[in-house]
Image 1 (cartoon, rainbow, N blue to C red):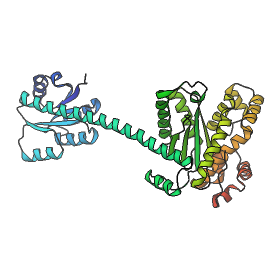
Image 2 (image 1 turned 60 degrees about the vertical axis):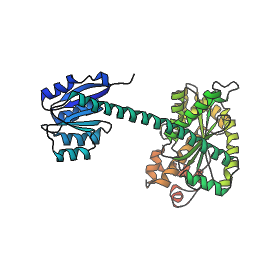
Image 3 (image 1 turned 120 degrees about the vertical axis):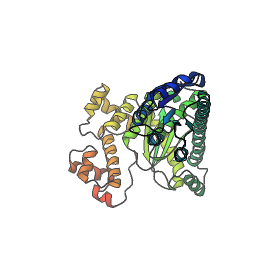
Image 4 (image 1 turned 135 degrees about the vertical axis):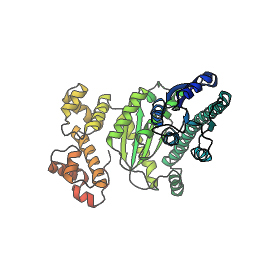
Length: 405
């Protein structure tokens, strides 16, 4: 059953309001009167409060006249349909009413049958518009899904080495993306899709992967990117520009909380030309597969570090305490699983963020040091030079490639 349309009657004469309310069989025409108002100001307040669908308004009301009321309604409640009730058969009023695109202009005394017919037309029009909106929403969803499919085919052909430089540039231009190699490749792996007997299969798997893609697109809404998946269900993201570590954590959290699964996100930088992507894609897939085999504790530790790396008080001990294990055991597990130390992971994340800030802001070096988690500018500069090969100021003046994760 369709919900009743909400009607507001606005007239400064109580007998007119009462006459309209009780002379119409509202439920019969799919409507209900939710409020009455005796002046324009009260009418506007009630219309917005109840988000009315239909407004019956007299033109001559105190405080705020009917025309001013209608202008405000058109600006603030676009869906609302307006029917004017007036005791003045004047051309200037009718002309202004037409300009404001009201549904009808009814003269007093009001004939119930005539008003009922007008209200039925308004009801039909609103129902039609609602149906059209639903249709457009469904169509938009289909277009969105087809867009993702077309983008996916392009990405798969690119990473498999099936496209010429000209075709790649043509596609990038079509999707409104820079005609250059993306800076980052991210991989999202979900344990429930990859175990020997996956928990999510068939059509459910297709819907699930689509939902994951939607989450990625929402979180990275302002980034220039392409999202695609392979036959196993691994999801890949090609990104132009820098991605904040916090955004990566947000993707994992959203997938975990919305879909009740255990995702892990990996990220690497990309260098070279268009022909470089297929080999980078294949080698990184292999690296991610090896890293995905590490202990869940190590993956949880890395995710927590990603969230907290800008905190100068972050230590191996604080991470171990968060995971409720000993710091000695965690240190050994990180070394075995990732081939690096806790300090190495934190330093790499901090330096990457510092490089982004040096490239995209005018912040002083000491301010950047503080933002990425260093209490001492000297220690930051020393760490930066050790990783990048030049000092922060030298890096800002020249071009140095991002280190791979």
